[in-house]
Length: 289
Image 1 (cartoon, helix red, strand yellow):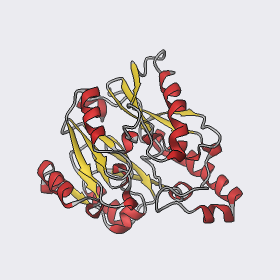
Image 2 (tube, helix red, strand yellow):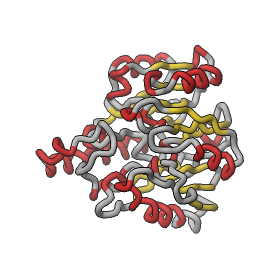
Image 3 (cartoon, helix red, strand yellow):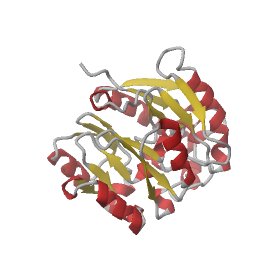
Image 4 (cartoon, one colour):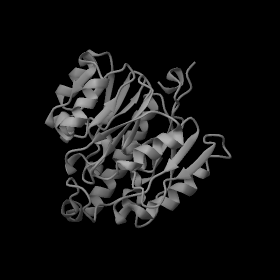
């Protein structure tokens, strides 16, 4: 039997939206009803946990840190593969206070055997975790987003640390500021992605590596609903509330879609994948699905 994947989530007690570091963030909307949004965020978080568990995951939850509202998006915290983790260096000053808490939290998993080694990117080498470095088990490579938050040189650091092939993809717009907002490799080998988020050269690279029949193109509505920002566990896909187009496209390929109302977190520019970090990510195909 394939082990249940282990996903890290961060409790939303300290989540809010009071600054703007991406075009989706709407602090004015949050300020209009902060108590209501906090209650909705708690309900959304618990619904996501339940959906992930139902999809086959073990969920680990750690507390956030006061003053670090975006810590609820641990996909940006680190890249993990085969028991080794490298912690992010954030481009935006508002998030740099997350680096040390995440470094300490992930090192706490070493005695439990969930991780073997935890390092951190060199200072000034901006790279924002699994949100910009997505492991593709079928192709045995990392897809690495750059050009918005992460820098191109970080791809070389990822390759050095993990000893794995890294394919850089330049992101074309601040609306899709991390790769995980617009690109999702699936267990069957398909890739769900939003083409306008990429430069022409990045699209050429995607087409070079992904066969036409495996390219699932998300619509503007799909991407704006943060449905490409999805968690794939086997044939299960967990995402924010899904437009009919993306649900139909995935179900036609044999995937089961579970969607969760994540509106409070979308106010900060994050969806289901952003809110998770897989701690047992493995390069072995059988263990990773």
